[in-house]
Image (cartoon, rainbow, N blue to C red; front, side):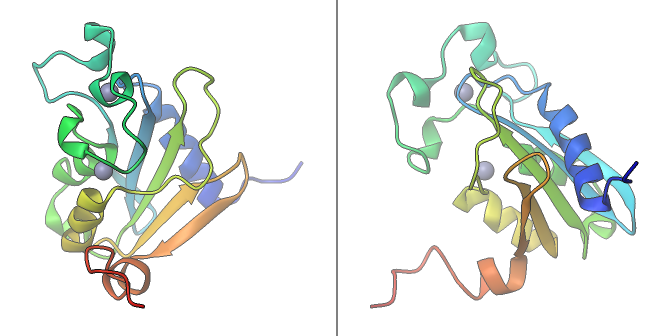
Length: 161
Ligand SMILES: [Zn+2]
Ligand SMILES: [Zn+2]
């Protein structure tokens, strides 16, 4: 029997965290790992005490057919990455790795090429997280080098021509 590699082990745990997500458009699960220890977990859902998309029976961005990546101000959720970051101490996230899984709530299938939104990227950068590992299939994943991929390639600046 082949032993599961460490990255997929943590991604499997993030996929379990995702099961608690309450948005009807997307399920996200994230965990933060530092020195081989899980320091926090997060999934996307409405702020504590507010009604979730699942309670309301609709998701505004989904109902308005907003394309992926646009109009996040309409999203009522605190995103998985943000929830994981606010649940940990700064010392626990500095240099850490964030593992993330995204699924379609209807089909329960993985969403390939999913990534963090531009607001979460900013949080991840300032939290000092070094790597983001995102699942594409049950065994394959992408590794984001936060400084190289999100700081040096700044998606909030106009595209260079
Ligand atoms: Zn929603
Ligand atoms: Zn986000």
